[in-house]
Length: 343
Ligand code: SF4
Image (cartoon, rainbow, N blue to C red; front, side):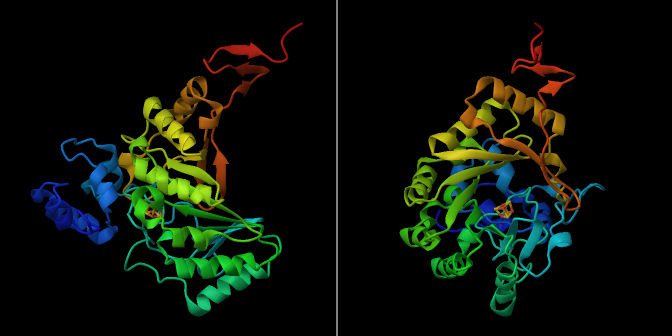
């Protein structure tokens, strides 16, 4: 298969879903964008009804079940958006959303109401100028995070122009790009794209979003190596997802796959309260138990920080587990020890 699958009929034609599911999934696709790249389609085992790659990318009728606690803007981007395309939540950094498009659309996306074809307009012309002017006029902005959408779906020419504008702002010392592209479309990480991201005098980090070790294929690892070898350090982002990575073997294997690819595990996100995603969310207690198990069994390099974006735009915080309580510290196996030890 060589083309991106964008409709339930496409998915049925590729043998990824049964044709009788097309009508119910049309209703999902009308609400939330669908796209499955050839690389992702090749990873899905259609014979496995619980396939963890399918759970992330194939639409499901459960997405039409919106719970009262779910929010269209679960992490409160809107409340912190002074001009279109900018989210300024913390003093030293801003998000810059250059595009609302992605190569694939994740069924749990926290921006699912705003990403995809037919949603908001790309940042261009005067709006783009206003976003850069906002950054230029605020010397406290040390880091710019390109997100979206997936910024790496932009053409190398547009990316290079954006990177050059950011590099020209003296107080912007760091640019971070959040992307799924090296895993979901490794061939798109071309020498031209890599070259567009290199920025003299500015540290450029690439944060790879991947949720299951099978996503780190040899091709995906090679795409990451092209970025890292060009001087672009990488960190990871993972969303904790029920039926995808909510067991310690899978989560640990994913973290090891990142480290083997020279990607430092950075964040494990608790699933946001995005609409129609309750079937994919765990509890925080389950996430903490997984983190405890990870800490007890796997290398320190394999430890991400488990974080929650507080609904309403109140920021991202680590949610544990905690190891200190009432003058005691818990070891990785859960046993308690006085600290300092009694003399
Ligand atoms: S790549 Fe990111 S922005 Fe795009 S659909 Fe997935 S989670 Fe949402």
